[in-house]
Image (cartoon, rainbow, N blue to C red; front, side, top):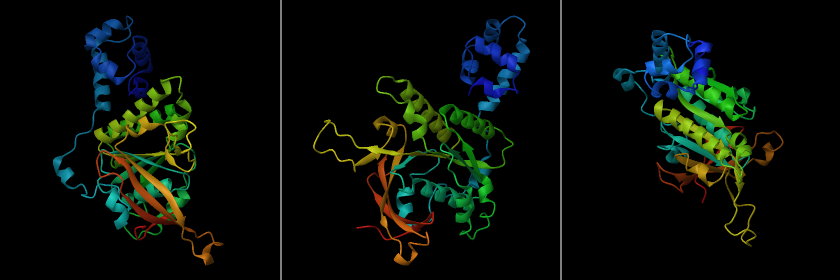
Length: 337
């Protein structure tokens, strides 16, 4: 965490003086030496030893995980995974979306990535009234109206207030993403938080990292790796599930110009190394249109989709299930032969 995020808890002039000495983050402050050693590096008259020790203690509290009573842990719901409520689909989601996991959801446009995650999030919030979810929108197209329409289908006590526990933040650049995560870190580290954040959804990471990647520079790759490690730290440290939506790209064969080139063969975007920064990749694909001919003109379409565990470190890979989407709502269906 950057010390600048601690202002005004720590006076701005103290933070500025620390930054001139190369102490810009909480790690720099806590591990760059003793309080007395750091004070000697600061300009004369900046602060006192007692005040610097107090500011250091404040930073320690901000970056520390809040304590939790064991009795409260026993009250936590057993079904902590983010599941859909559809038996077939949950067969491959079970264990994949457990707290502490970082899951990539990839596929072509129209494959149902956002619809699936919105369904998982709302299903969880409806049945867990003390949970909240942070949805980071990187394209500015999140639809609260669509979420409200889905919630109308639930007949459960948590449904009316579920949307209030879905926090939506907009981040069009990597720096904005880091700012949102810093705000969340401070909130999660505060003992005053009455709701527990159980998931982070980044929809999507492709426009954030894609423009930074270059074959002649490693800087963009380093930024992507650092950001993904930060998300993983959130998942593991605060015991929550992180979903990152990734677009697709054409599969490029090892031999350029090969006759085996097929533009219809797709793969997750952002390069092969991105997949190794996550615990699993869930690949979605549009399978077909199951709309009744009498409903085609009404907009009440129904599409078939496939969800495949493309790669996983935590569950079985290369398994898939079929599901349907009708007006943004997920429906179960028989497994496609």
